[in-house]
Length: 272
Image 1 (tube, rainbow, N blue to C red):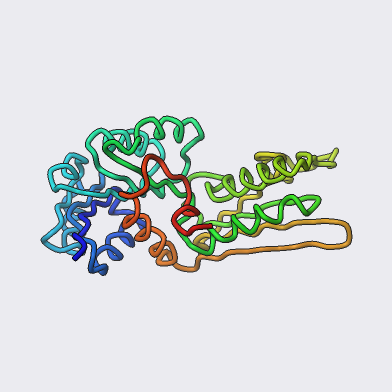
Image 2: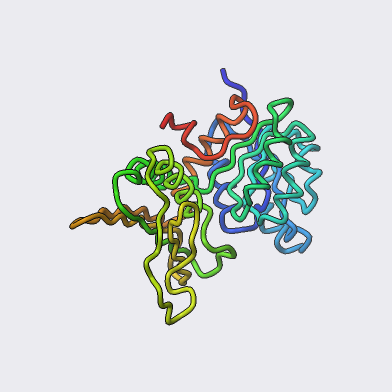
């Protein structure tokens, strides 16, 4: 019988953190043993979380409880500034990490690659844990060399702090790299007169334009629009509920111990 994986959730008071707690509690092969969030300093929030996760999980504002509770894998859904402090701390204590925090820069990933070496801890960092979003990125990468131009429209809820989204940036990077491997030139923008600053969005890797929408009522959505002579190709993924991310999160929790070092994205876990 496979040993139960002891899980801690960092950012457990947030919308995604609470969803991760619920998903872990419902999984027979996982045990939620610690929940960390600065909001736990407030008595009401700590009591509320303790009520949700039950008596088997320690709720605290201190990350030290992760080590004290014997956590095997910590799931981090916080903010970039906090994750930059927490993740090296986890690596130094041999605690594997599954990270959905957005806003991490390329230099952050390079630093975390040096921290998570597989001895003693590994990490999986994904810009998006929805399986459909991972497939959209892969399909976009395949299509990019064959179409003349492409732009990304990403839409998220109005409380999202960063723009553009990590998923959009990663999609642009992968498409630009695919075009480069195929010897296709970077994209250029023929617009010469911008009446309203920012109307053409932001230029990401390879000249891919990204447009960010922030509105109440949305969760996480992305459309990739390709154009070529006399035709267009549009692909879109929509997450209508935060539960859409949980199968990917749990997959990473179960697999991270066997993936040496730092893994970026779910592709390797899905075999695509």
